[in-house]
Image (cartoon, rainbow, N blue to C red; front, side, top):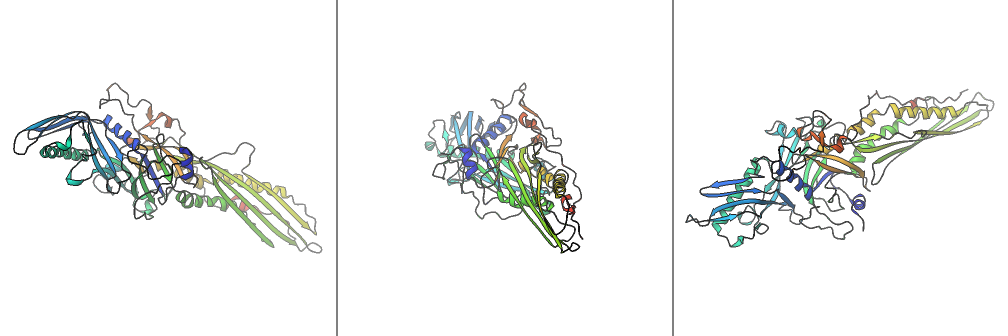
Length: 548
């Protein structure tokens, strides 16, 4: 039976979407626990205190939890659990009397069916600047993008109830047999709490950048920014298991942000067919970019410049000339390496009319060249692709040649010609491919910021390619570690132990602190000056063939 890594590399497929972010139920609950542990005492996450006409409900909720719905997600996307650590309430039990009943709320678990609500903030809308401040201005200048906010919205269920009594538990109390007036009054308090959660913005699931205008999208990666967003719950299925249906309640079930880029039309019905496991208990969040966008739309056209600049053209017209070339792009399945291998064959023939009887000759030069690149995480939380230097003594280009001469004496040393081709290509690779390398360094710089869960941010970790060539990246949710209970962290406790200040200045507040691991990662490579485009040195090489 295959393990998780084998199945992830072999089976996963993000189609028909261009890019997807998957976050496990367990990871979402950990982010909620962080919010709860760090919340102010006035937050409805940590304090429940409502009074109305002689009734009251007061208590301390535990950290909230969600349960993703797999089977019923067309109507209910998830269930929200409000659990009480402590609490007491007194409610009227009869509309015609002042009779009340007291309850302890210890151990109560109130479950709400929830749908995912969405709001879009366009430049100039109230609240836009507040939400846009969560994203790096270097990658996403304010005013050039909209912000999509996903939030938890309580769903109306049968009878107009605000919570699901059948899924809830009441500390051993038989809720079904309680008076209707009491149930109604309890529902009133719960409704107030739901409204307070919304007003205090404690129900945010995440934010996402949405492109508005094709002309305004980051030129380094013109197709990467989402232009539409769907969401879906992706089931966990044990690798190798024959069924792909999954089940509710598993911590490895994942909430998906499903995005299209470059204004391509999304599917009419949102959803992602099960292909294989993108996430598991140890890999709580993953980003996947479809091979169609990574290779076909971006990388292959970019690397065409390498192919064009390595061709050789004669400046002198010869009797017959042919230039055959081929470039192969490969990647390491399950790894980070990208290899570009090229072969150019330059062949010409000539006749020397000045020689007695007419001499003729020709030359064929075959050039094999290669460039290797690697994906890697850097300390700004994103990725870059950089060139891997060749080992000492391994040239990037090797040219061999053969010649034939008939009817005249010819002393030309074609070895010098071959060396000239190699020297020219090596010079070009080392000095004149800045347009290509700068784009490789920069294009994935802000991919980790396209979706921000809650008020935190993702950091990109290990990157690799699956069998299809899709880009897979492990995501680490960055936020201060949650302190232990009670809710408020101790004044003496350093909740940022193990974190360091982001070495990259001018970042939003939610990106100010980084785990020590990221601080030790290399900085993003410096961009090289881009020189005016011209024919490569190899194209300028003249064939030193004497003509009669």
